[in-house]
Length: 312
Ligand code: SF4
Ligand code: SF4
Image (tube, rainbow, N blue to C red; front, side):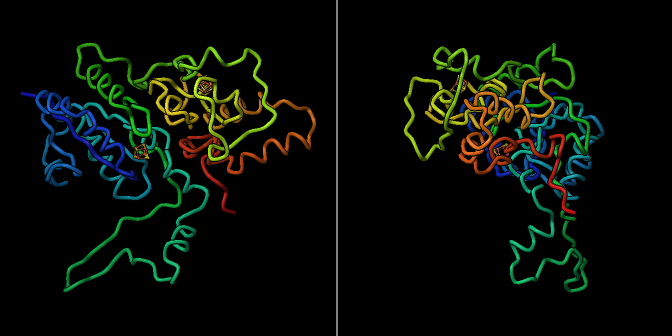
């Protein structure tokens, strides 16, 4: 009997699903090694198929996306009950991710923006005598481990093929790491960056620039060139893909194990390189970061110490 595996998406853009397909021909090896019992984006299994499985009969469920409505919570709970292992797959499931930026407002604010004519979907309706219902849309987006216990985390937006491959080998192998492990190297991205030798010992920045304003030198540390590269606070494992493309790291692998609040760590790393003690000059330098939450908490707002904007 091959081990059973499930994939599911909650509040997700679909990129994490594509990342699995990006394994290319190795996907066939995975499909040979396991029995995929649920994967709504690719295979025609229904919720009732999962429901009919004995508890604990799935070896591992890989769940991507944040959780933002009642149906996603129910599906996460169902897969938790049926699975020996649950893996938070991608940074949205791990920390809340991009959908978590919705915590800057609430359900009401989102509905006002989307349904400008004021007509919002009813959550209960009868059609030809049949009851129809929509999931409850929450005010606050949360990471997967706020609604169910999570055994492992695979970071990335989305996880890269090498990280997925390594995670599968580790999880299907005889000696899996302790529960709670983030399945990526526990070191900062700068350690793996091809430009790390050009990063000065004492880094000082007089001006932050945005990516559309400059074409950076392709060899030199991007932070040293004034671009808000979050490599110093971000977990390694992506092989510095963005930096190799001459773009600064935006932090999608989340923090290392030593960091509690990724955004605060990233903000502190940026603040420490500002080359001024003058309040007005510091304010001018920071003006070049017009969206601090989107810059520093882009992937982690729901899991941060703040969690969300206070609406009152
Ligand atoms: S982690 Fe990135 S790729 Fe995956 S669902 Fe979230 S936004 Fe999409
Ligand atoms: S700050 Fe960015 S560019 Fe500089 S060494 Fe770190 S990851 Fe590389």
